[in-house]
Image 1: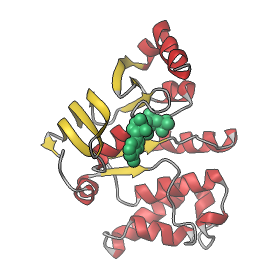
Image 2 (image 1 turned 120 degrees about the vertical axis):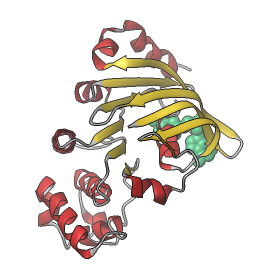
Image 3 (image 1 turned 45 degrees about the vertical axis):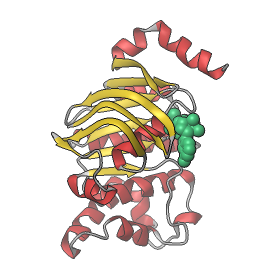
Image 4 (image 1 turned 30 degrees about the vertical axis):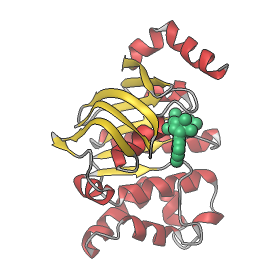
Length: 236
Ligand code: ATP
């Protein structure tokens, strides 16, 4: 479904990601891991169309989307749950979902909204509550819900568990597992390595803007060198 071919990208002249290639088959999941500053967020942002492309290509279902505007990528079925959630904190749950589905017909909006509430009953109970007054876990659910309003085939999630209580992390990963079961393809950037390896069947590890490892989660768990990658990067 998604293919990165020798992708290099960054911010204006700054290069954050260099020569990264990987494949993400439909209905599969991939965890993108690595230490701080490795280029994980930049890779996700490039897939969504928010970075400067310095080289390489991004293909989505065999279509070259490397230079497609972000909104067109959403129309193709790509959605992002950004790091820090980026909710409209003064708007209610319902209003945030409306923003997510602003390009939908009234009928699709209604169907997708119900799907979000079925997946996250806590959001259903808090429809009239402002996003900013909810707990971190509830806000993360809303950020996921807003992305789901666009009916994504590929869901990009940046730091699902960051700063959340363990119980909320469980609820968010349960929802992600349900989406995976429904056939949504998932690319997950995650600091909680153990959790990510348990969830996703495939793994890419980045360091200093490049790929250090690409393989299955099983292979990653068995690779002792990967542990060193994280430790040495932490001491740089
Ligand atoms: P973290 O886990 O800390 O978010 P990351 O692996 O997601 O790290 P990125 O956020 O992609 O890494 O950062 C990769 C590099 O790009 C870093 O050197 C960072 O300073 C740089 N960078 C990120 N955002 C910008 C920006 N808006 N402008 C310029 N450089 C940036």
